[in-house]
Amino acid sequence: MQRNIKKIYHSRLTTDGDGVSLNRVFSNPQVPEFDPFLLLDAFGSDDKTKYIRGFPWHPHRGIETITYILKGSVEHSDSMGNEGIIYSGDIQWMTAGSGIIHQEMPKGNDKGSLHGFQLWANLPSKQKMIIPKYRDVKSTDIPVVELDKGIRIRIISGSISGTTGPVKDITINPEYYDITIPANTSYKHNTIPGHTCFTYIFEGNAIFANGKLIEQGNVVLFEDGDFIEVTTKGDGARFLLISGKPLNEPVAWYGPIVMNTEEELRIAFEEYESGTFIK
View 1 (cartoon, helix red, strand yellow):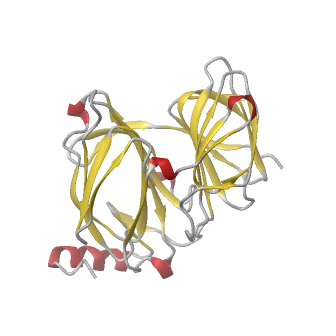
View 2 (cartoon, one colour):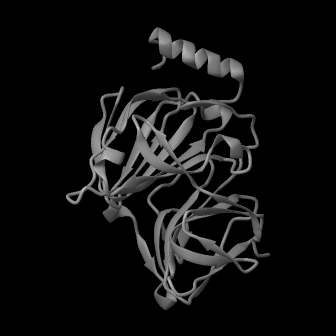
């Protein structure tokens, strides 16, 4: 059964961190529609003043943050002593678990450009207090599948045509694809029934399911089903296609911390203020 369009949302311009300009695709108001996903930001600019002050030291608990860089670079460091840089095409899958304090400082490329995404995925209650960890995945480790008609898919997590992405063993069994489809082309993609599935178009435009043209900057949340079908017109399209198994658990969310109850939230912020946040 084809997945039809459930809802369409248009990303909105906002700022976060220390004045970083970004497009918020979905967030807290859309809980629990995107369960297990909490937030998607499309960030970046060709103007360094829009992002250079970055995201200084801040805490996370109870979630995973997934950062995917298209252009430029981001330096990161954390309370566990980790330091590194993710460049164009790289991804960082961070499991905050019981708590981590980190900073993400965009640097752009030699032309001053920075573009990418940050996705937040919720952790189930039994994993919210696990030990934090990073999965830094280099661009060269992300396989690319070339299909008929010039369709090109980067596989971050999930499998297509026998090729599997490098991010595995995640509780929500996510699929994360960066899909490029040339103009005047149709593509059918099988999905996992019962999983939440959405797509975010960041280049061009495309037609999904019921024939509605979805333009750049829009996210489509799909109904349940076995597959989605997409058709492009004159401009072609490039989009993220993401899915995951819903947790169906209560969400208590404030700022960078997402737990199951208000009491857990209160404890988290009290520990942060008292210096006992890191376990």
